[in-house]
Image 1 (tube, rainbow, N blue to C red):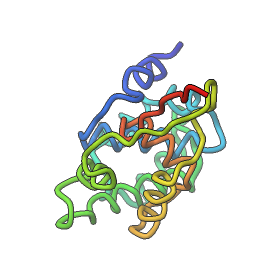
Image 2: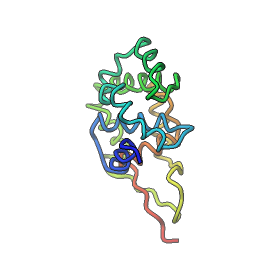
Image 3: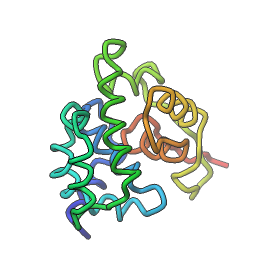
Image 4: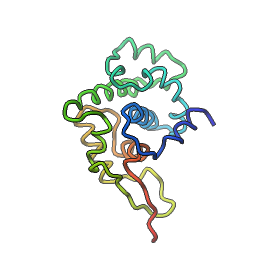
Length: 170
């Protein structure tokens, strides 16, 4: 198991309000679309290097020269649309101010700063959509975020600990 996968497993599902950690989880969520989370998480060390230690304020300033450098980097997942989405998402995070103090405050405002519990059938997969995931995805898209469909956002909210799944007793 790669160090990136171990690191992601350590982070997954733990409540976080930290903007850098949230951006890291969003990066994995964007890159896992069409792949597996393991494939995306295995690239965490390369993502950390490329995306300024997951500082969205720095990444928001990236432009075509950085994208071109990323596209030439064999350690990254070289999908140009996803790479551009990461920069767009960093810019969208920056634009959340002054309405929200940071990305964490934005995400947690949807649940009044409380965990949102989602009851699921025993053994159900993580990628089940929820009304919260759909609502957050729609708002993120409206605010300029990219690659944030309901399934991606659902997994992102689970990873960040915003949504907690509990198996129903049925």
